[in-house]
Amino acid sequence: MQDDIINDLCKMLKQHGYVLAIVNIQTEAYTDPVLPFVYFSKENGSIFALAEEYFHIENEHSGRLLWTDNDERNPHEHEAWNEALSWLKRYWNMNEGGDNYLKFMEYFGVPYSLETSVIEEFCPVNQNINHA
Image (cartoon, rainbow, N blue to C red; front, top):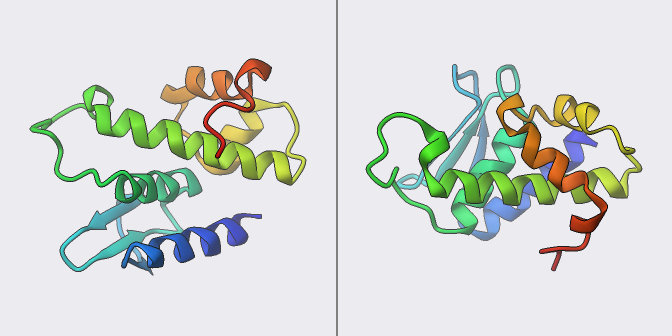
């Protein structure tokens, strides 16, 4: 399933004029809007990090909104995280991933700081929200 997701993200990035470069870097994923490339480390990266970078591009986020420290205070990060989680949850459901949110987090490499958001994604009330 992970290779399918990477392929789909690659196609989606191309629709925005970006190229996915799988490289050996220390960070999980990084977007360079000038080139335009998304650099992804299969060794250090996670599917979640790659999906998050895609949603920054999709939502036309640029810069860090003058944030120089904690990403958790950046509203662009929250928006990209939430959209990445929803998108990955649909993949999870299509492949009968089950109800165990911890397995979901481990499989996609979702940071544990987002556990509450993942639990909300698994809540039956939220299953059909924002799914166009």
